[in-house]
Length: 543
Image (cartoon, rainbow, N blue to C red; front, side, top):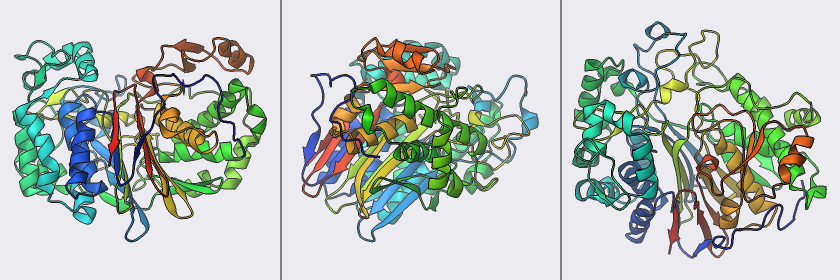
């Protein structure tokens, strides 16, 4: 593909578009407090891995509706010393007693409540595994900023205040949850209010002092499993004790003269790579000035990728996912030849899909590059805080299918298919960009689009993030099968896309949450260029 237009579609909003430039190191997260805490760790001599442990621990305190110690994560790490690339799977498996007969197939998986906590939270195992292998500073020092915010309090952000208000009924359901996240257990906090979470502070202190065992074999596991068992949940202490994060090789595709990597299954990383692989096999040089045609090709590639995800994505310990075929050039060519089949569209049926996720990234002076995608699955996860822990527990297991014939069917000791993914771009064997985005089905679309905007269209990192985006299909728990575009596009594009065969095309607000929140860092020979999404109030910062 050769597409070097500086711009397609609408101009960048003049309020945005300036990437943060740094010489030594950089970090980008969806929350200012997390970015600043990670930057301080870098200034103390920590590396990118240390910074990401700090950022994700802080996000669990100040961004608890989206992420936390009670969730899952995937890591991509480039180790500058060895020149090797690593994927770390810190997602949890279902419990030994989590079986199909424990759920009503007609009603589906429980979405909220103790019975929705069907998989062991994996995020903490990711912090520990990454830090033990690559970290420089003591774990206690990396976790101290989060511990401080939990004990001393932090100002409530616009994002947190909004999700407190809209989720008030859920947060009031369980007294142990209401006590932590509502004023006097009743009212939502407002923007600028100070929120404290001393129980979470103590949980993080235990992890800082005793490491992984504190969470999976000690007091924290005791509190969580006891609470769940007392309230109808299914996880046991043995399930926690058996949990391990796993290192693996990333999956990858060639994209022009670059390589793009992503976490392997059970991550949906292959979706991003398939979109890019198909787009790389198209001649779209004639699309300059025809944004609707670019969107047409891109969304058709996305639809094909979703079909493959829904057919194949699974825990590879249970079913091998044929990524060697699905990411091959021959397969991309075959798909491109069928790209304009009139029946092609978003999947008719899919799993319940929400977008409560955070992506953060860091690059340090040594050349290490790290991306971390961490999540509770739905906003506020299961809605359950085990008494005394201060942390929200995820509901990631609700992504399992109760259909015995489904490859992603619920089984004991199994990881569900995951929407979570992030990406890293390499040129001549060196990392050129690390990026990711939250937003369920929007994650792979946003990542592929940002890569194309930067590499093929000449955007800066921040311009690529800020520019208007589109979303094919569902996210944030909805079931829309159509195509939605942010309102900064020319209104005439709707008719043009409909003429190309797209259904349910609509314009939505500018800078919409539905488009997810993206962060990215580009690595130049003499500088770092970082960007964070204004849709989340994120911050890119460095030195």
